[in-house]
Image (cartoon, rainbow, N blue to C red; front, side):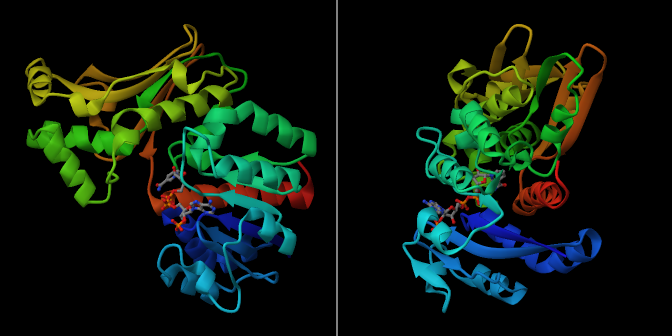
Length: 344
Ligand SMILES: NC(=O)c1ccc[n+]([C@@H]2O[C@H](COP(=O)([O-])OP(=O)(O)OC[C@H]3O[C@@H](n4cnc5c(N)ncnc54)[C@H](OP(=O)(O)O)[C@@H]3O)[C@@H](O)[C@H]2O)c1
């Protein structure tokens, strides 16, 4: 059995779901792939838990019961205030999981954590988009220099494998990538069309259901979708930066525009589009015909159309969700574990 030591940086929605997933499916994974996943460290904003031999499934589930920011109280493994440096002075993980919040101004704390992991010879799996959006090529070059594996399929469409799909199209010329890559705004728009309610009511509903954040700006002002376009552009080797993406503000959408579209047998979607040939990227409220495949993508579902010189591909699936994201991380962990065990 190959023992793979894991450090989870961030213990919120996604970090906790990953811990549960490892606790519940760890045995199954060991049986199927001969890989034992050992969580040796977990950190949140106020401290960490470190156990060199690996936390047991019971311990992982007990940690998930603690309130946010309190894992340092878990005895005897809790360490108040411990950050990545201190954690890595105590344990040497094989894989670092970055699930801290996305901060598009500084990329922190994710960026420093990732660079520290690479510098320490630790492979990295990422769900936090910001470090990749701001420093994709720097991270990749540094990792290559140090012989480190980096995976990040959870950053775009979570459990729906768009990143893997794009990586598999190396011989194609990708001309346009467009679609619905933010579930929160698609939910709000779906509500506006189906219940004919204004933006503010649709947002309240989304917030009550936990689909929208208390501060919804990253989603409704198009930053989240723009960030995903930047990651997509890097994956297909046609990089753009966040400032290159033109963005609409969904909160400015008047219900009368929705009525108008419906009357014309059309509907409005918050479409993210990267026209690769023209190097133009945008996240725009777009009127589309009712028979367009994207019209039927409702609620928090995501969908992307990839137009290549050879064919058109459509990928539809859930674009977020704690467990979906945790499964994407698990896939990345296992693919790195395979490389560590058998070589690339
Ligand atoms: N939720 C999804 O469906 C989804 C899908 C794809 C990607 N993502 C990305 O995944 C990341 C995590 O999402 P989430 O929903 O789990 O966020 P979250 O619930 O806010 O959790 C973030 C965690 O990071 C911790 N943290 C903050 N600063 C830290 C620091 N300096 N050192 C260590 N830990 C720190 C927080 O600590 P406290 O607990 O102490 O506050 C919290 O545990 C985000 O970047 C998000 O964009 C999420």
